[in-house]
Length: 262
Image (cartoon, rainbow, N blue to C red):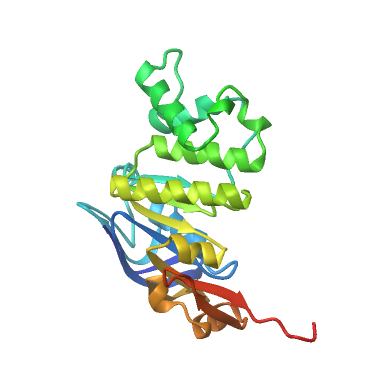
């Protein structure tokens, strides 16, 4: 479990996110939703230790990060528990898909890669549905194929905490579902803490055990989708009117209200 204790994050002297106070439980998917530019990526980067805290504390097991100066040793120890998949990852590197995935475990390439690592990398590629692309240059792949390859690399790290920033943004519906199904299976099977930024509210409601709603630089709500998703919350967060229906499992289904004369 990760404890976020009233954390605040600044960039360039400007307060971007503040007042985030919650626990992220193991074996569960925690989806971060909210309008563009409200600090969702900033929150993930702070959790990874890539941005310092202006206030508050993060705690994971015996490790913690707090506002103020953090030693390089403490930061390295913190990051060892994490795997972070950012929105934008360079694709012009001269590596094959298999080599990129292997980097997830070894951190660097060598002339000899043991059979166990190669077998694990191929299993992760197979899980991602792209084992047939193992020998292709990563730069030659489509955006969606590259997303799946980078997610396979994340799985190779076998983290305690998985941070995914808009991992389905370049995928068609079939592959969005395939990736999020895999995220859910691995999270539950391994007891990981998974935090994922999503813009599709209905996907977030279907896959998240817990929603963190970020708007105007603060956490507006936090809880199970069935408990917190209401027309009022969506209107306050996004400035749009919606109807919230329920599927056969009782999960929220968000439907925008469209003016009849349009």
